[in-house]
Image 1 (tube, rainbow, N blue to C red):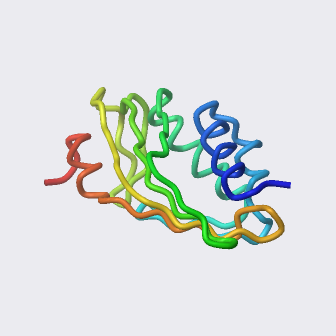
Image 2 (image 1 turned 120 degrees about the horizontal axis):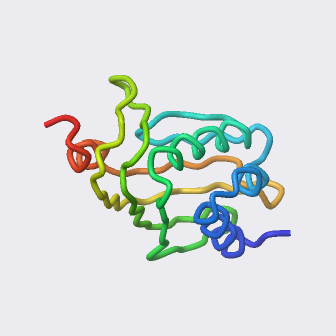
Length: 137
């Protein structure tokens, strides 16, 4: 059984360990995760999405800077940092590694059901992210 705070701590651990199955296990089977990089469903969808990001940036790390809980809703602010060394899928197609360091700051909203993530909405500026990689203007 995960409290929202425990779930968030576990999320950061498995993300930074690049543990795809551990990440998938945190999501309800019919969960939906929406971000500026796309929408995925269920633990397998989240695992595949994360694997693509880890492939593009094997040193990718997330750090949660603030969080708050209200019932089954968890709000968090985060910083993602890494180096773009591998191929990254973008709406314009796959972009090969640029060798550039990036830093993304954003926020997320998680709704829990049965001690797992049922819905996650992640917010950040995708234009800033792509500009840091030398993609886009």
